[in-house]
Image 1 (cartoon, rainbow over the protein chains, first blue to last red):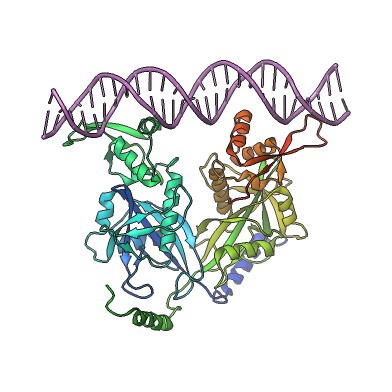
Image 2: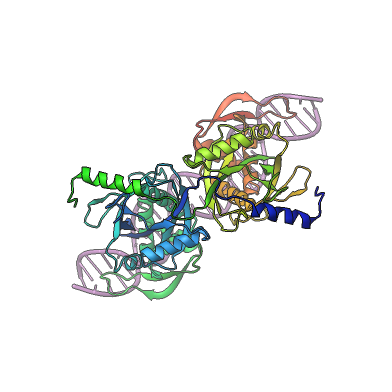
Length: 253
Length: 253
DNA sequence: TGAATAGTGTCTATAAGACAATATCCC
DNA sequence: GGGATATTGTCTTATAGACACTATTCA
């Protein structure tokens, strides 16, 4: 197929690249937004930032920012999360890319959304010390994996107006973890290192927004091989203390 | 909360947007790539284009192209697919966004990948009349939903060198449809309007790359409520002809 | 001892896998 | 009729849901 030797082809390509004009086409901006989720009190929670600048000043947005010209997408997501909150080392998974031309009034901004799961203590720590960082409770107005936007409320119940299409991003995040819960070790990421089977069940019920059968949930989890009894039990509960388990392998989302 | 009347805030935001300088940051290029898949002869197939220009001249690439500055991502995906092949009206689903800084030697190119499923006749029609368009058979070197790059071969078995990270994009496409097969009506998109249960089973086996139990496959499909008997049967087969079914609702991927 | 939840054992219903028996086409 | 695959029926096994019963802590 190749008529010319390999070396000649390389030089040819190098010349092409040197003369390539990268500014010929108008380019969009590319950003990342991170939906950091946790489960508590029967609901999913996330962290939001009150926007102090235009556009959407006063509305609440996910931690996000523009991608550096030489920065990988997942590195950008970890960076904006660490800088805007105090959450470091969170496992992030790419969620979906939102590119509607009108989603940002400034200019064309295409946003690659990421989702991360943390336990309640880490979510609270993430918002510690910063004023604009808000701890928001999600209201999911659809069942199963229908999908669609969700609403955010502060802990006192007032609705938080979300900036841009962040209600859609959060909705996609909820849909994603609902879908993955059946076959991926998701619940563990939302719990501390040691937890009871009932706490795990509550997390699953919160994500799915429906009650689960206790007996078969226990059997399924114990049969999955992902749980290990610690030998320890709960303390200071006014009933028979439950055994504490740990997750055997901290794998992917 | 708002000290100023709503009208004043709007004017304020309008002034901000008018003065916003969109060129302050260096921006990446954004492209779309489309993995158009079909199933035949026990394997998955796709269409590839032989690159006549640098970079990666002579290698094979998915149909793709840059996103217009005011063009939605899914519109761009449908456009490049229609222009580079003859496939129109294909249902496309966003797959994953590939943004490694070194994936394109020209400049930073972030690519939003899409996947589409068509039956064999439409895949063949997609490549009719064009010389560069190649019909490639995929070799998946991993099992289940492990993930990773796949290899492409032409129908005579020669390996086709893939351009950019398109082996990863195709791998992600295979992983995605394997994962969705259990709960989404995927098989139907890969078949003509009328098909036998055995043909549907063969498509499932091709996607999953493992044999399925015939009896329980039939029961599961018939119980799913997604199939409707047409009353017609196969013709010109040298055995008892199977009944032809149709899919009841052409829904999402 | 009573309240409350943890944990175990057993029965039943449902779905999957295995396999035999019968049906229907072409030659 | 013989070859080949389609389709139906039945048996076995695994899993999920229901529910009763026992266990263990604190007040």
